[in-house]
Length: 257
Image (tube, rainbow, N blue to C red):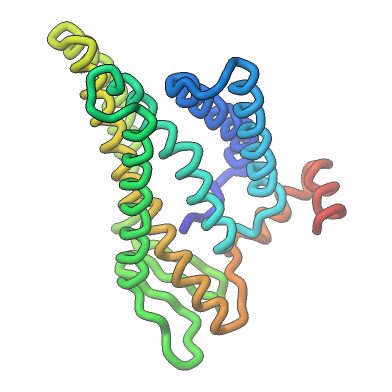
């Protein structure tokens, strides 16, 4: 599970970036799969953007960042991130492959969904349910305490300062690798390589961060039902204060709070 970002401005960007990213990827996938006419594509893309915009507003202005927030976040990430990016290039295989692009995409999505659920089951099993009146859930790298409303990650599991540098370096290096591959391979081979890379990244996301979050939410929901206590982020007081600094945040609290 995740805590809110350190700065509220980082969270506010989500309400604009989320709909744009979801709309662009869903439009591209539907168009490549030949789903509907131009008007149908625009309506579907618009519906996806509106849905993700509403969910982003809830996350920024109304969410307590508890178990329901994280469960919704995993579902949205799978539907609007994993599903589009893992199937983006698969329609090209319908020209030469044994399976139509739509059927192949369905099999890939089923495989990724099963991987996500299996990873969640494994991560949930790593944390036994507490006995007696204990309110803590303990994993090897983190502890969730419902009584104190805290989510603590060990120092070994926290991202280090070198990760952004490695990410930027990897992005720069990928440009050179792409140009080298494009000069050494055919267009069909590039599609295969791109599909495998995309599938590998999506599989890693399902097995590691998303599966871990879903497994933690699984256990938290069980403990919430047993103890009658809802988990909220320990940073919720700070988040509420930041929301109250804006007129829209004050209106949201009066209307939905």
